[in-house]
Length: 335
Image (cartoon, rainbow, N blue to C red; front, side, top):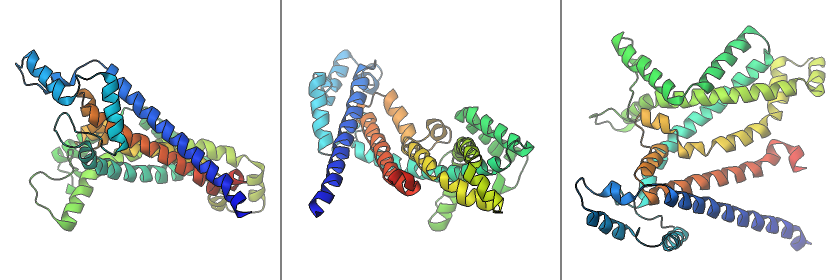
């Protein structure tokens, strides 16, 4: 009896594992093919000015780019299966070490901004739904639409212009004069708590920008979903019983938004690894987004494939985790 109870679960787990492995292989193989089809030769980016054709040919041989594409694919696939992502064409370091330097930056920047965006966006969306049609609802909706529609680089440059240059010009208080570039004050030898506070101060603009854009999207989503729930019969019944509006929103409406918000969070979570290219570039944060763009421009194939492998892994794991938690978020799904 126990064997027959475990067998369906084991079969489903094996099926999910096989499907996940196939999907992961397809994503990485497609990335490999697109890189080889893209115009440009990595050797031309590595040779110094005035180098001869023979110099470029020697670099191509050293990098293994003179081999047929099928041979290069087989070597890359064998290395990937052995957890060897190769060596960067540009700086000669192992790809795992290059990604290891950039990944914590994107995770720290992305996770904090993602949590803030969902916290603020969910509260703002519920608040708007409770005041549907009011002037306050219209005002928050306008701000949300502007934030969503505005390019991230434009908002970033505007934030730097106001909180850095204009704040210094107007001699505003020091806590309003925020640093624009980098993760630490140049030349400052800080340790312990002082270093952490300096990092937090440098994080205000990039984290605030990403959180504001994300919160605007979450607020729009929560507002629309909450309005659908508020019009349900069982919500009207709860109000007819005399429940306070805050209790109706917290206990009934918010509970029914757990499943869609969990799915939305799983879809947004991989973005913490890819990072925001514009935000990391504008504020000078050496994260995964900036690394990926730099590697693509330089045709650094191993680094691009390593970043794609990390990103695809997070996407797959996040979706599997969300799928397994949907039964907790909405018991009707588990039933």
